[in-house]
Amino acid sequence: MKRLSIGKLRGLQQITDPVGVFNMCAIDHRGSLRQLICQEEEEACDRAMIDFKLELCSHLAPYASAVLLDPIYGAAQCISHGVIPKSSGLLVSLEATGYTGDGESRRTRLLEGWSVAKIKRMGASAVKLLLYYRPDLHKLAAEQLDTVNAVARDCIEHDIPFLVEALSYPVGDEVSNTGLFAEHKAGLVIATAGDIAGLPIDILKTEFPADLRYNANESELIEHCRKLDAASPVPWVVLSAGVDYDLFRRQVEIACQAGASGFLVGRAIWQEAVAIENVHQRSRYLTTVTVDRLKELNEITGKYAVPWYRKLGLSADELANVSDDWYLKY
Image (tube, rainbow, N blue to C red):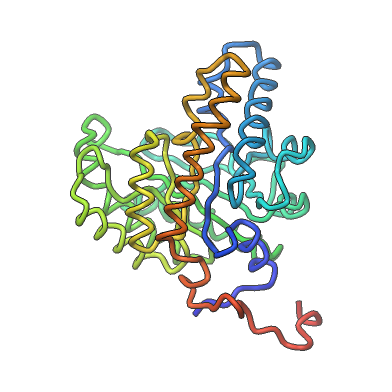
């Protein structure tokens, strides 16, 4: 049984729904989104990025337990425009966009001038770090885990939940052979979960442990997810990685049946809206199709997902032992 501090408990309560499930929306995209929406000059592109995130957040946040935003184009702007309702938590990214190193040796960088302390100070509910990770590249993996540990220490100091998003990537023959990478996917994702979730983090945001384009066997997919669940001692949520919505919906259902505590979805529910140039048509699309997708995912997690506290062996009515003098030791 894992016991959490009061600050981490409160943050987890803020980013989950009333029963303790994560129904979260990712709107922290930077480089990938910029390529999709920007053909203008730098200043105009920055404005377009901010406006699109404000639009997404205003439509989706009321139906999400939390929203994930970046510090450059989204977090402060969405707060200042009042588009994050009090019912939704806020996660903020810590990493810089992209990575250092080449495509087969990716190193996560922290955003210069940004910190866990600032994320806490702005009133956010949790910290998110994206981590490129290959468990079989041992030296590089150790460096990446050092980064996770350093951030985890800061999150403990500032008593705020820490979510790590782990992404695998192809190396060697996998780069030109997508089928080979798909064949290795389950092993990579499960081993990554064991390495990262064993550190002092609070939530693991993970890829689905299979590529459904190559493996549609539901019993095998559920077994992969059960192995992932066994490898992670902390609550885990499935990420969308830009797949189409129908595919992601299936991933969420399978993952939650096997132990996941919810999802953190991005482009899978809103990516088509990027191509809609007419403001009114885009707003109508977000209000109908995109919101309906999010509601459907919420229904799936409500039926199958494991509340985060249950994963930790805690009871909903007593998440921590609180002594009379707790405030003196806090």
